[in-house]
Image 1 (cartoon, one colour):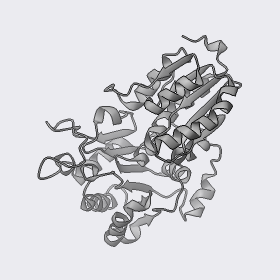
Image 2: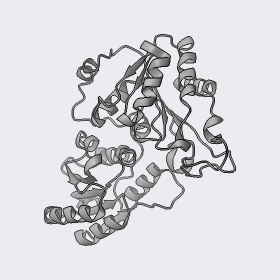
Image 3: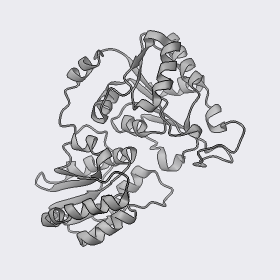
Image 4: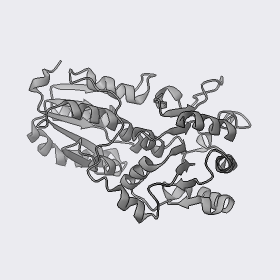
Length: 330
């Protein structure tokens, strides 16, 4: 166990993916808030996941690992960074990735005090991050709603996208990676129509995210007209997370945006489908996740369902989501 007073420099390795990087951030913010201001916390992250960490004041430096998704190219680029990293003289290494490449990185860095993320535990990912940080004798961390943004000019951001600060926005996100994580589009439409009747007829529904959900968004626009605000492909990751902070509620399938929502403290309904509930559900006061734990085949993690219908998603009814959302907001 490291003497906390002797710790002056901490290096964190979390290379991928966006959702996993985002889940980590509230715990690093908790750590940052308890350490003296002259203690350095640096992050090594993959290029595609760099944007949100770079916008946060909790990190002194964000080292970006290039090489795309090619492990050999990533290693080559890391070897170029290695002299600079060694020169920092880190006291503690937190390997929050824990795969073959990060193991090689640990050995090459030679930092004596380190801890490693538990990839096999059945605990929620955030709890595993917390345990990895706490085990080396640093101040004990807990979940903190993410607020350490360097630039929080949210009024300018709202103006950029034609949004109003005092308006009521609900984000709907059909962004699950495959069929077993997708709620039928007609269910989203029914949810929106019910929501506009009660509890809030003034609501506008935002759709954020990458271009892969373009077809879904076009369908929503055809069914819901001016109630839909289409921002698909128009925001950066940093802009998206700040917009999520402004939302009244987020309804989301398992995706990076789901985690971006609840880490900022926005009330969030998760639709997990085949995703493992124990790994993914934060069980926070401002979250409610529909999951498949009640089914014999639940938490299967399969991309293609073994049944004729995707039971874990078809069992979720729009009225159930409405009721859960109202309870959450109250």
